[in-house]
Amino acid sequence: MSLAREKRLSQRHDWTLDEINALFALPFNDLLFQAQQVHRAHFDANAVQISTLLSIKTGACPEDCKYCPQSGHYNTQLEKEKLLEIEKVVEQAKAAKEAGASRFCMGAAWRSPRDKDLLLVEEMVRQVKAVGLETCMTLGMVDGEQASRLATAGLDYYNHNLDTSPDYYAEIITTRTYSDRLETLSNVRDAGMKVCSGGILGMGEEANDRSALLQQLAKLSPHPESVPINMLVKVPGTPLENVEDLDPIVFIRAIAVARIMMPQSHVRLSAGREQMNESTQALAFLAGANSIFYGDKLLTTSNPQANRDRALFTKLGLHPETRDTCESDAIHAARLAQQAQQQVHAERVAELAVDVSA
Image (cartoon, rainbow, N blue to C red; front, side, top):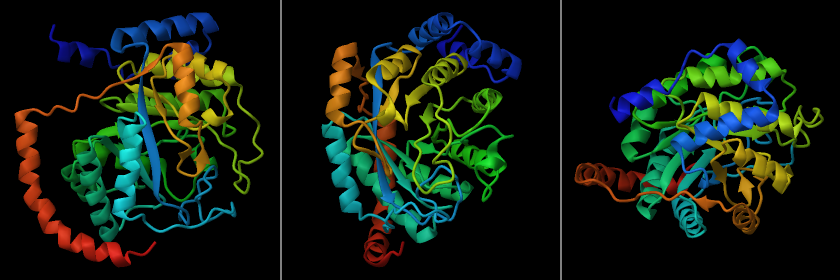
C-alpha cells in the first residue's frame, strides 16, 4: 500500500457522537495512552510546532461573538487600531523567526476583508514568506475569489474556527451562521490552502457540544492540518466574563480525543495557556498537543512569555519542530513566475498603504 493511500485511510470522517462520547468517557490513563500511541505513529512525540500570532488590525469588529474583546458590540476598553503598515508586520515576523517560530499568523478584526485591504494583506504574505516563515491569516469570511487571491500570494494556512457545536453556536454568535463558517473553509480548501480550524472550550457548553465540535472538524475532508483547541479567556466586558471555569482535566481529555480523531493534524494548545500551570500544559503535550503560539499576546489576550516556554520545553525535553525551507525546482519556478504579478501590484499597494482606513 502506498504511503499516500495509507494516510488517506487513517483519516476517518464518519465518527459518531456515541463513539466520541465513549472516548471522552475512557479512564483518563487509558485515554492518554491511546492518544500517545496515535501521536507517536504520526509525529515526533517531543517536537512542538511553534507559531507567533500578530494582530494586524484590532477592534471594532461588527460580529457579536460573545467571547471576543474585539467585538464592537461590547465595551472591553480595547483601543481600536487601523491596519498595520507592511514594514511593521515584516519587522515582527523577523523577530518571531529569531525567537524560534516557524509559522507567522496574522489576524484582522473584520467580518470579511475589503478589496483595498486584501491587496495590502497579499503583500504582507509575500514579504513574510520572504523572511522564511510559513504564513497564516485569519481575516473573517472569504469568498472563492478572495481565497484564490490569498493562495496566489503564497498564503500557506487560513484560520477560521468553528468555535463550538452546531447546536450551541447560536448561543455564542448571531451575526454569522455555522454554514457561513463551513463555506469559508470550503473556499479555502478549494483554493489549495491548508486549513486551520478548531474551537473554544469553556463557553458554557455541554459535554455533548464538545463532542459535536470535534465531530464537525473530523468531517472536513481532509482533516484540518492545524486544529487549535482554545480554553476560553474570560475578558471583562464580554457576555462570557463570568461563565463557570472548565475543569482542566476535561480540557486535556478534549486534546486527547482530538488527537485520536485527527491523527495527522497538528493539535494546537492555544488560547488560555496563560491561566494554565506547567503541569496542565505538560499533560496537554502528553495528550497529543504538538503546536503552540509563542510570544506575549494572542491577538489581544496575554500568552506565556517566550522565556517561560523555553524553560518549560527544557524541563519536558521538548524541542521546536523544524521547517524544511528548501524548495523544489518546480516551486521555485512558480515563485519566479509570480514576481511579475507582484510588480504589477507594487504601485497600487504603495498608494493604499498611505491612506487605508480602519
